[in-house]
Image 1 (cartoon, rainbow, N blue to C red):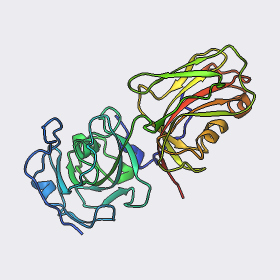
Image 2 (cartoon, rainbow, N blue to C red; image 1 turned 90 degrees about the vertical axis):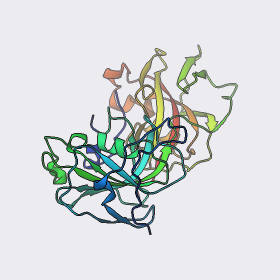
Image 3 (cartoon, one colour; image 1 turned 60 degrees about the vertical axis):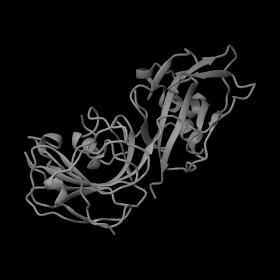
Image 4 (cartoon, one colour; image 1 turned 120 degrees about the vertical axis):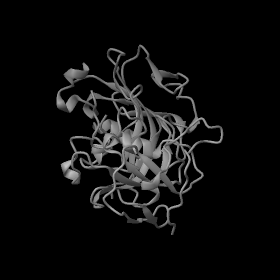
Length: 325
C-alpha cells in the first residue's frame, strides 16, 4: 500500500519501467581499483558534439541518423564526486534525443533544481539510462548512444516520437548521489516518548510500542538531526519510511526493501506532511499521528488494516528535498 504521489512526470517517468566540447576515451570507465566498470565509448558516442558547462543547458549537435547495436557512452567532462554504483539513487539532469532524427524527445532542464531521481537498477529503470550513468561520478557530463534493445525496443515510444527499433541519445549531468539512509547526527528519543526504536546495520527501524495509550496530538521526535536543506511545504521529498499501526504494532507499509520513494508533502496524509515540513535533509523523524491527521477523515484504510480511529506511527529518513516552485 503506497500512500505517496510519484515524483516523476508521465513523460520522464517512462524511464522508470523494468564551455566544453566532448572529449573521448576508448576504454571502459572504471574506479581506480577496477571494481566498477562502465560502458565503453565508441565512434557513435564520440561523434556527438556537446558544448557547454556542467549544470548549464548544453548545445548538442547530432549527425543523424545514428544507430548502434550496443550502447556506447563518452564522458564529455569529468567530475570528482561520489561514484554512481549499482543500486544508487542518482540525481540527474538530462536531455533525450531520437538518434534516428536528431530531434529532442524530452528534457529535465539543466540547473533548474528540477533534477530527476532514478534508481540505478535495470529492474526498475530503463537499461539505457542505467548504462549511461553506472560507474560515473557526480560532476560528470556524459553523452550516450543507446541501442534500441536498451531503450524502447520493438514498441518505440510514441509520446517521445521514437519509433520501433530506434536508438536514442542521452546527454546527462550527474548532479548527485542521494543517500539511502539518514546521515544526520544521532540523538536519543526523549525519555517520556511512548515508544522505542532500534535500527539494523542498513538503517531499517524496528519500533516497539509501550503499554500506555497513544497520544491525542501529533507527536514528533528526531533520532537523527541533519544539516541539509530544510523541507518546505509543497516540496517533493525523497525518503525511506516505515509505517506501524499503534493498535496492532504491525508494519502496514514501508520503503525499506524496495528503495527510497519520493512524493509531495501535500500529497500525503496531513500528519505525515506536517512532520516533515521544517525538518532538514539528513534527519530521521519519528512521528505519532492521531486518526484525525491520519486515515480517520477517509474512514480508515482497509487494504492496510487501518481502522478510522487508529493512531499510526512513522519512522522517516529524509534523504532529499526539491522545491516545485
